[in-house]
Image 1 (tube, rainbow, N blue to C red):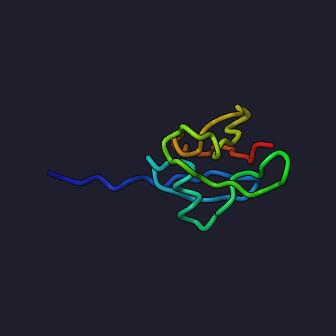
Image 2: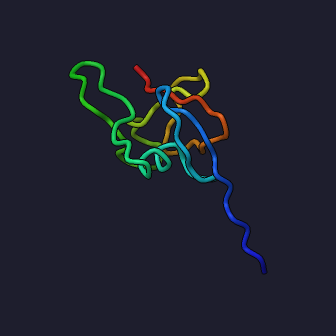
Length: 87
């Protein structure tokens, strides 16, 4: 049995370029590079990252390629994806 290496994926988050591994969620890829804030809360501007990690809480919502309300803990990174914090 051969093990195939995972492909490296390049994407942007808020205009900055990052690399991750194919199959990682957006949240996992960003956390692995030291990012600790995906968005801020509406009223108090509190930083939010990931809370539940299974898509229930919606704390990690981001905009992916112009589509809002994407849960970073569930959506896999893709080559060339443009990811932005959601307001």
